[in-house]
Amino acid sequence: MEIDPFVFRLSIFILSIFVGYYVVWSVTPSLHTPLMSVTNAISSVIIVGAIVAALAGDKSSLFNTSNIFGYLAIILAAVNIFGGFLVTQRMLAMYKKKKKDK
Amino acid sequence: MSANLLAVFYLISGVLFILALRGLSSPETSRQGNLFGIIGMAIAIGVTVISIGNFSLGLIYLLVCLLIGGSIGAFIAFKIPMTAMPELVAGFHSLVGLAAVFVAISAFLSPEVFKLGFPGDIKIASLIEMSLGASIGAITFTGSIIAFLKLKGLMSGSPITFTGQHYLNLFLGIALLILIFLLCKSQSSNLFWAIILISFAVGVLLIIPIGGADMPVVISMLNSYSGWAAAGIGFTLENTALIITGALVGSSGAILSYIMCKGMNRSFFNVILGGWGATEDNIKSSSKEQKPVKSGNADDAAFLMKNASSVIIVPGYGMAVAQAQHALREMVDALKKNGVKVTYAIHPVAGRMPGHMNVLLAEANVPYDEVFELEEINNDFANCDVAYVIGANDVTNPVAKSDPQSPIYGMPILDVEKSKSVLFVKRSLSPGYAGIDNDLFYRDNTLMLFADAKKMTEDIIKSL
Image 1 (cartoon, chains in turn orange, red):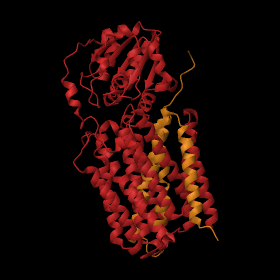
Image 2 (cartoon, rainbow over the protein chains, first blue to last red):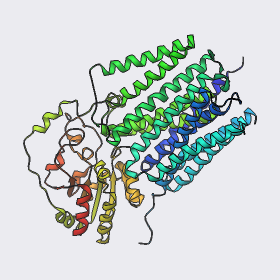
Image 3 (tube, chains in turn yellow, orange):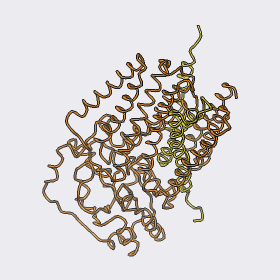
Image 4 (cartoon, chains in turn blue, red):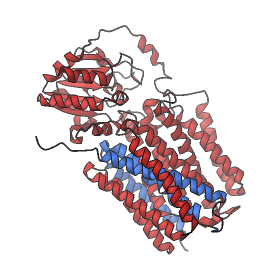
């Protein structure tokens, strides 16, 4: 009997939860705010679904209801991607070590 | 591009996202980590566009959308003050939630595009996945908006509770499950809309009973939800990058919620079910007899700190409100010139989001190796001459250790009371969020500095 591809995806999902668990525990508490903003940015990878929704399908009409929802989702996700990564960058640039000139 | 190759690229961007989080284990590697995240995102978007192969008008529309969203995002990212980070993150969560809802709607209306079947004949598994994704996304959306309004002060931070609230939530939760079940049987679009609408309502109802100072838990929880919503959509679209990312973000938010709850010694459900302080009968404790308090001015504080050999700064939400972090840094610089050793102590739930104080101190150019977490520094209070408490309150209250009747009993606190003298910057003697009196105010070694945190700190600089 063949294994349903769903089971493979479920395996990836479960293993990723564990990866996430260990990786996030190793994040230093002083970087918890950047952690939230960067997780926010990467969860906007949902944009790939939005792109498919907007562009795939019947090429002659790009403005079906479902396309429009796709475009809207692209805009929302793009705000998050750019905003999230840039604000994280801005925060991380502020974390400096003590100057050694003492 | 073949589906297999596409999947490999999605896997690569998933791995890059893991590396992005991994980088945050230390400030040195964090910037590189962020770069990995950006590369991962670029790969995911790039290969998706190539795989569609629509290089006509559609691509232009896509670029226009990216440009609109991207410039809004970039504008916000550069303009936002660091003190507004909690509401920014809450706002961003709401966008992820809404995007998940939109993608799910799109998949429901045109399932053939996503190879999920046909309208009215969508695969059952896909229906479950997309309705879960849409539902969690919708809860994230409205929940984050309420959190945003509360953090921004546009809505009262006090808990809004009414009788039967928890039963209503329970009822709506069960209704959602029944609707999803019915949707799988009938494929009716009305049911799908109903699921989304009810989820919007649940998001609001879930967050309104939670008070302002519990926001660190709420933000982390919504962070987690946005991850699970993304994972739900990832299953629907059979997209590995989304599944991996969703799982990462989901567990990240869950861990942060756990850390925040532990920082307050409360169970997750206790926070979620809402209403602390305001609903309980703590008001009676405020009618206690007036106890003597020693209060001082900036000169006294400056004298004490100048003659100390070590000072520990304990910042809290009040520092963020007063924007006192820069003045604080200047004060510390002046103290260091006098040969005083200065460190910072951060309680896990100080501020309105995890790591809030650290970001503000970093913004004020405080080196991160002078900033310590509760466990690292708590023993040092016994050997320190002056503890300078600025904008913190409940997290320093010794009642948490001594009085089993207190609502904050058992909460880990910073042992400020062990230091030789305590300078407590506060506008008045009013109790903190938990609604309880802080014993520390009445100790012999405590000097109250009644003033705005920023103003007082600036005055101290002057007299140094």
